[in-house]
Length: 379
Image (cartoon, rainbow, N blue to C red):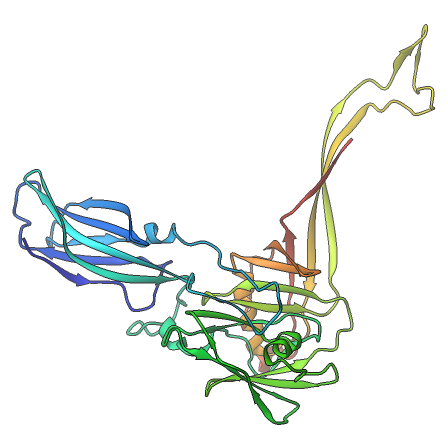
């Protein structure tokens, strides 16, 4: 009995791709031979799959993607106490183990070889360098495609920006902050998991540093991790009521998009009704109205359900930020923040078109957001 692992998914593989595992055996000529793939998640056997060898190559090919994806769940868990290190987690990935075995002659032989693997909650771009792991290029970097030199935040807003720590997990991470080009203040180190979702708003950074490093009179500040990329954040001047969306981006982190121009609410009603006579017998006659002079309706609405849609308009965008907004439109998990609560919403806009500054000049983005919680009232 000899099982050899010939192929496994790439390093930092996407759980949304096919996760192919290929093995070979010296016993494929045995009667009734099958390859056996035992899949373990958190040390629990979650699936046992038996497959006949490939008819041409005699190898066993198994796609673990569907099984692994079923163990993903949302990991958006912002800290209720506002601080720069809002939350960190390893839930961006699903670790799994496969024990490879075989079955023939009515006997099962398990765990003849095994491997430990990880699948991450991101999706690969259409065009990429397939010779290396796409997500691995973000190790130790900000996990965002937004314009890092043109970020805006209101003084009382939250600002989530993710950072990928998987290249060197469980290290002490600290932030370097400078306000209006002044001296740099370095905060204390915090042990972090694979994904760190920072809140880089003024209130969160001040809480992390234990001092008012960023006052309300500041115009801009910079944030940096070690020798990594610098984020330049400018204080926003809101001319209208601002709507804030937090969303899962294509890399598996959560970040914030603000819509600072005119935002409008639209409501649609779905009515349920029944038909009844417009007359009733009162005494010895038919009457149209009751003792309170209320006319009898022929049709009665007994329940009305309201659906809410917000039409949001961003401020003027750089070309980089407009392209980054594609992640928001395509995101499967979006929250609208109101009064410190996060309301799940669905992006109603289904199309995005690339903008190019030299040909499209100035541009912003308008999109529809459908609030998932509907309202109803029974008569």
